[in-house]
Image (cartoon, rainbow, N blue to C red; front, side):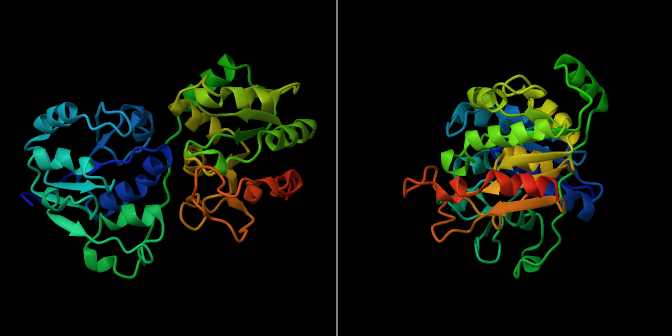
Length: 336
């Protein structure tokens, strides 16, 4: 590289949870090269999360929707990046994800093989899914020399998002939150219903917890609002905040909770990165592949013969992997 303080560009992922896990890569890069600067190309929605990561020096928003090609936007961004970075790390495995660093003329470009992008990457690595068996391992490995990743045995720093205490005070006032100890609930799962614990179970659990003296906060996006209403229906000290807060607000509100109950979702990883006690509910996905990156988690996973199937909807039509995960089991774990 041209100097001892490399300028690194990371092409970030498109999902909330993956972006949180990418912090493990950023932490690794800064630990290995303390003087390095890190820029991250990412969707606009992810900027509030990246701003809570002290390792990230610059966020470069790419105004392209999920699944959209957006050649003009990629070309315009590439023109602004030309000459500014020494090395690019491409986390997504798609062809289009590698376009920006290629068009920007970044001399070193590393990523996994995928979608015939041979000419777009200078260093093309083969993904061994048995060795790099977790998403976070795959991300971190691309920031390490290849020889250090052969057996998959390398440190994985745990993400840690910064908290804005002033914002938390404002949120407590704005949403009339009480002084009761709070339990967060995240009923959504962007990937599909095979990852969602039944809403009626969340409601029954919330009812028991309110009776025990807790406040319940249901967090999620606008698409989760109707389900949030079902969870808090008829309950005092229960707040449906789905669609009423920003992503950065969720960081602070989760940090203020005593514990959270969550599907395998992006907000699960946000909760892990603020250190709150997590009760992670797994159905069609696997806690071995995308675990919450924290030591403060209880994993609820039945490991039925049909799971993990990694499908959006249950191919067998029963979703027993979650329907048979009882309210009482989670309730007892919260009080353990």
